[in-house]
Length: 57
Image (cartoon, rainbow, N blue to C red; front, side, top):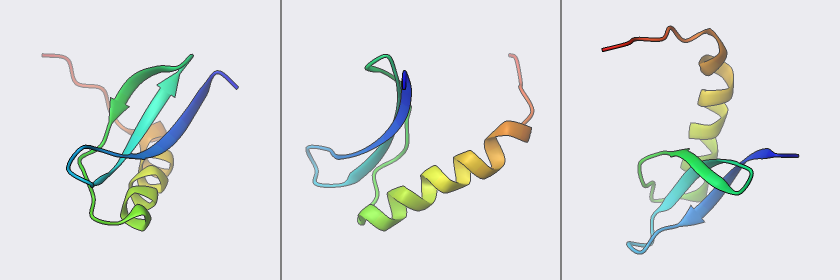
């Protein structure tokens, strides 16, 4: 699969959820203190993302 979510720890020891496409990071979340919180962020993106409006500035 060319795209996936990955949970990694940053240098500060926080858990960050990243969305990768062909090994390139497309976006990432803020840092969370627990892996479960990062997983919740992924679930929220999957649930709410498809219907989110697009704003152009």
